[in-house]
Length: 282
Ligand code: HPA
Image (cartoon, rainbow, N blue to C red; front, side, top):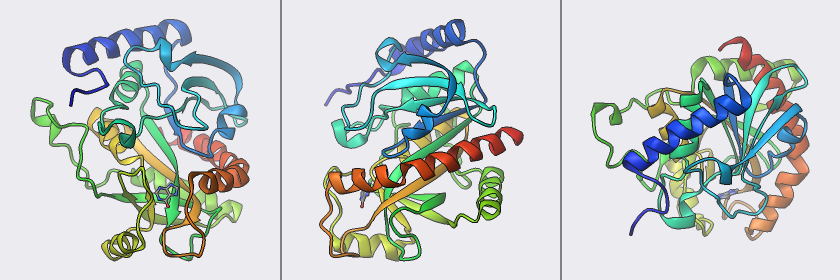
């Protein structure tokens, strides 16, 4: 199947053109960019001095059609004075079977001058101590589909190190902030399931035995792309439901969106404060 996304030289040209466009329209890059997953959009609504650009105007950027995503890059300043770029909308592998949808955005941000990528997502929880509404600080991941957005790249930098994919200093900073604010923030292992169907209870028991704490359908290809690009990565998961078989509730997209909405304001508060702290360790 041919890819719905730009590859090779066409992708390289798009990244060069896109980063020039961002530079000319918005000036120097902020140190941090954030990918806003389901439930996290409130964070972008709180920024001040906002400037925006649609993904449609950025060469090679995907136009995913997932409910709650508007496909817009928002640049603005947090209440604490940190200038950041926020991506409202991400490509998921379940849309096309192709996991390279975030290559253009992530490499364009790197070429613009971004240093750190903060990934957020909505996840199912495999641990009772992380109930719906809680946040989990991702410390590592399981790439269950064993798919990589780096397949087919030439050169030796494709063999990129994933032994500390989620930056230790950023994790320490996030934990210190959570402790100060009295917010429970357990670290956990994120397990990527391809989707789009939810998991079976047997799959969830297997993932739990493998060491997974949270499960979702995004993030891992983005982390791989960002580490390959030389960006520091941090990831916060908003727990929207107990994973399949762990509660009596049937899993639906509406249920996850409802919980994401209910907890989104608190998640956005924490994200905004954590970005201010991360700025100090750039
Ligand atoms: N499984 C997969 N993806 C998800 C879930 C889940 O339980 N909750 C939110 N995204």
